[in-house]
Picture 1 (cartoon, rainbow, N blue to C red):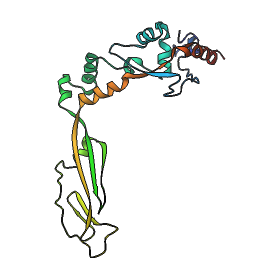
Picture 2 (cartoon, rainbow, N blue to C red; picture 1 turned 180 degrees about the horizontal axis):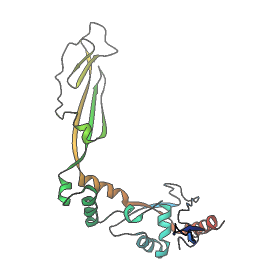
Picture 3 (cartoon, helix red, strand yellow; picture 1 turned 90 degrees about the horizontal axis):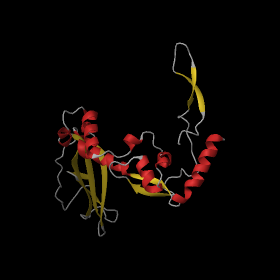
Picture 4 (cartoon, helix red, strand yellow; picture 1 turned 90 degrees about the vertical axis):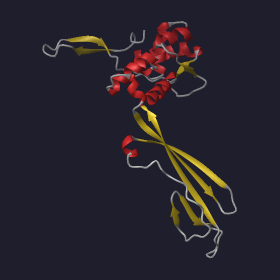
Length: 232
């Protein structure tokens, strides 16, 4: 049903004799007014289950597996087989093939990247303590240049501005004079957590579970507009 309305074009499968044949132009791209991301009026979110295909989802939601093309179109899927989440066995096979492992067990011990958490604690003079946290991905090559042995420096009572000791920066506050020993401090703590290959691929697979579903009441208008755009 999806490709029935697509325009035809001439294409030659014989590069020697150049004998063109009429084929369906499946490369046609159609954008409807319903292709608006996260439009709560038109779409709602749906969590895919293991084994779901566009046909199965269309049957569950619309009672008609032939509406699978609507699932594909509104989610801009080019290869539903791999853009839908894989079941656990298929995921294992994909990981083994992708990384050239002899067994999926290798994926549990090999690090894919590191998760870096930077925690900054600002203690102001006669003021509040502010804590901010940043999270970043650190590749294996980047991690080889850093040490995972950071420490917290002890606070001192006198300071010559500026001073950086360990991972704590001590400085005179704006409201202190030149002779004051009252200081403010900024403490920076960094931690690195390994993310293993299997955990990374599992989470990437889980990201595919949420898709958009066109609400039932918009099916007929959607099909009408789709046909109108293709036929012209």
